[in-house]
Amino acid sequence: MKSRVQLVMDMARNEKLSMLELGRRMLGARGHLQFVGTPVQLADMIQHWFEEYGCDGFNIMAPVLPGGLDDFVDQVVPILQERGLF
Image (cartoon, rainbow, N blue to C red; front, side, top):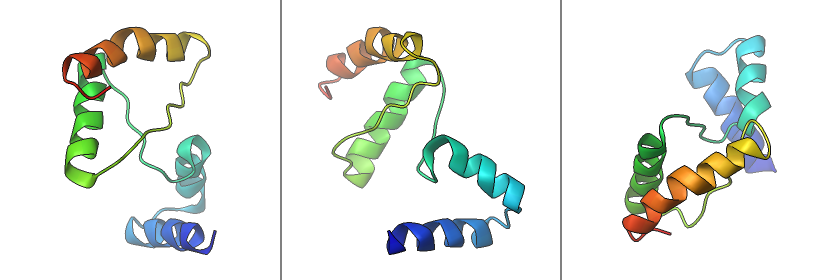
């Protein structure tokens, strides 16, 4: 927990975020990387993080359930499977 608090404090300082901006940033993924895009863009980002940073998994937080998760499974997962990443 301490390292998470430090990460958030550093992010706020480095990016000179107001309390409102910090609150908005934390609301979605609590300071974790967030990205949105087309299925190909999402697959590209996942592949980049997996190959370049050694990620071993991702938490998918669809904004709408179940539709958002269905979209991810139906559209992004097949791309990742084609690339041998899923």
